[in-house]
Amino acid sequence: MGELSLSSLIYYSFASKFQRMNLKEIFTITLILFSVIDVIGSIPFIILIRQREGRIYAERATIISAALMISFLFLGQSILNLFGLDIGSFAVAGSIVMFIIAIEMILGITLIQDDPNARGTGSIVPLAFPLIAGAGTLTTILSLRAVYDEVNILIGIVLNLIIVYVVLRFSTYLEQKIGKSGFAVLRRVFGVILLSIAVKIFKANAFTI
Image 1 (cartoon, rainbow, N blue to C red):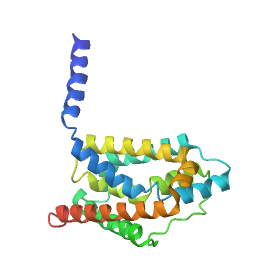
Image 2: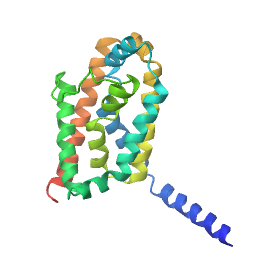
Image 3: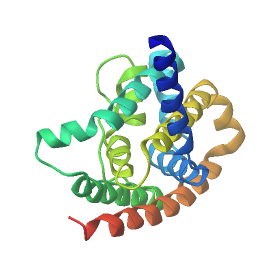
Image 4: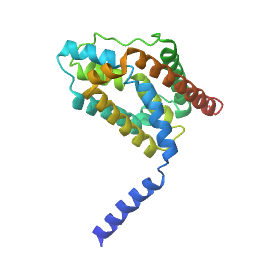
């Protein structure tokens, strides 16, 4: 009877999560994270790391990025509580960071500086962090929690990690096929989309603090 109850509990838990899935939200979240991570626009830097390190460990970089992003999704609120902050305030701060990243993508400038000479294994630092799961990505994930369901955010994260893995595995091939001008166009298009989403998140939370 105990086993049946446990099985039923697990079943209803999964059923509840499945019911909360929303394809529109998943698509929006995936697009937001794709724009913020900007793994396509980072291919030239990925190539540079490959040349410097000899190879890219796509699996290692993806797993470490997943651990950082998923941990921040579920523990980020606890971290905020530790500092006496609420998710609305963090969402506003996150939307400002997203706004700055969007401006960088559209104008082709660098406003947020990461250290490209950070010491350590190239597939971990600076590839997994801060290139993939950097401050902008982690801030965005917590900002999304103020607007979207955790299940949909988790799915969006997983979908982006699949994209990240594919790009890391085939970065040289993609660079040859798309070309520098193609990357420049994609970067600006996603920049405009990200800018619009940043404004939406700011409007949704700025007047509720």
